[in-house]
Image (cartoon, rainbow, N blue to C red; front, side):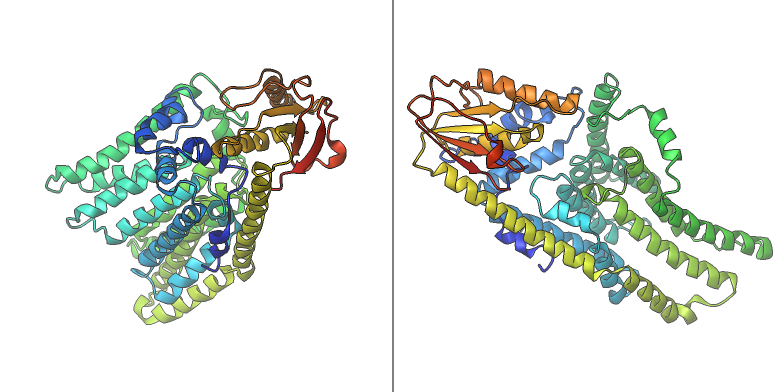
Length: 499
């Protein structure tokens, strides 16, 4: 509550949240369950199998479910995210307390929330990572109870299925989770067949294959991602080989090297193996870390939501490797681990204390407050404009290329509230500094010239403005000095949209 509680007082925000209102359609006749599949197939990438650079079935399914359930009640949207944060915290404590003390578990949890990227996940409503957090929480809870030596209850397999499907279907870098059901099927290959449990795991694998196939079909035709980076595997691997100086990778490799060194020296001396099979887990974590660096084309960490789950697996891997190094050292020196259990836990607690950042957690709370303030500011601007009685025509001004999203978003907000005033768009005549940005401006100029029945935008016509009371709406960083002269209006007032 301390970290993300202020979000419960937040309102709608211009960026991202407009999609919710786009799905809802109108305030008086919002979308219902009967519209679910129509919206999912016709208005999202789910209906563009093989022809979209993104393919997130779970993300849009869950977003639509939320849209139909919560509608325009912003408190319920943020409360649901608060619930996900609490479930995720519980899942970490649940799996850690199975192997370590409660004190160590709490300290690790605090260290997890010492990074600022969590603000980008829980202090916004449009991110896919928030659903991925939910999926990871379900997986951790199921793995806490999973016993590879014995038969497991059905709910464990259901949680694994839901966790894998939700996480990998919300963000493509979680597609590596396909290895979890594959590994379990391999582990249980010799157990008596329980086809209901195996079928659940197989379904999660097939789901991931659908996502993978869609992306493969698209990138087989397009060799660059949405950011213009090459998606050729050879290019990505070449890039990855230059990123081994990354401190996260180096730290994990060094600690793995320490364990292998103790094990090798002990084997030379005693002809016995002391390396724990648990070492396989940090190797998996290192693989996930490298995959995320590969996925983001080497630009990682980013201090944003893209750091999840990379930072989390690094923290868990680092902690586990430190523990295994202590264990290997004690075995190498022939000291009984049980006699040193308390000192080892004490050292681990001191290390975790050094990883916990009060400043980092305060920053999360500060970001939640900033989100509350910016959304209230935007909601105030929206309310003032949609209830304005002094004008009968709204003109939205595009001052720069980056106004593309704010203008498009604001139009969708006005249409949801069924603002019946004629709406037009005016665009700066200035060119941008890049081809991409000029493309955005040209798109807006086309909208200004031709209008759009779908967006309920009329062509900008100065003759039609004669005798009208016009309201010119603009967006930061534009100032009143940047506003164009609009001829024809009987009166012209202006209003900035704060967000």
